[in-house]
Each structure stands twice: as structure tokens, then as C-alpha cells.
Length: 142
Image (cartoon, rainbow, N blue to C red; front, side, top):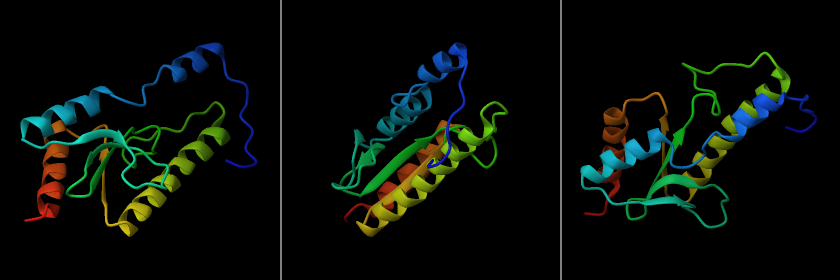
């Protein structure tokens, strides 16, 4: 975001944005519940790889699978992303920066032997849990 100076935001916008949860969102809780019901055990909100300052929402240590639940707005969902009209330059840079960080995170994890699974907040819980379950079971040591 270098060189992009945010414009003043209204107190209402600042308040609304500050209340956005980054952990334990409804989508994340529903996914974890479905994974647990499927018999999978995991850790939450951990850094999969030391030295990489990126925290996954759910990790499966034995299978080396890190799950990230991405919000459509914050991560620029190709289907549902919206681009704010107010402070547009700031938000475009912020969201594009998030996208670039996601790509970098996936690459760093892959270099360390991990698989990053990205789940969009708009995905159904069943579909997301099925993808994660498949990734974990296909990578578990036999």
C-alpha cells in the first residue's frame, strides 16, 4: 500500500469496519463444526510454518493442510467482490495487497510441503468441508 494515503472516513464507517471479525466468524465456525462431525481433528488460528508470519484458520498438522476462510470483500472474491466508491484508491490497494499476500502465503506453504486450501465465505459449508476433507485424507500418511 505504499504511496496510497487513506482519505478521512466517517465515524460510522470506521465503527462498522472495526467491528468486522477476523476470527471465529460464522462461516469459520460452521466449517469447523462440519469438519469435526466428519471425524477430523485440527488446530485453529496457528501459523503452519515457523518464520512465515501468516496464520491459518484451521490446520491439520499431520497432513500438512492449512485452511484459510476468505471473506469476499477483504480478499477480492472474483464472484462477489465489491469496490467501494468512497476512498476507492485506498480500498483497491488494500484488497489487491491482500490478494498478493494470499498468493505469497500459498507459495511459501507449498515450499515447506504444506497445502493451502482457500474457502470463500460464500461457499456452502458442505461443499467447503468436502474439499477440505478430501485434501486432508489424500495427504495423510498411510
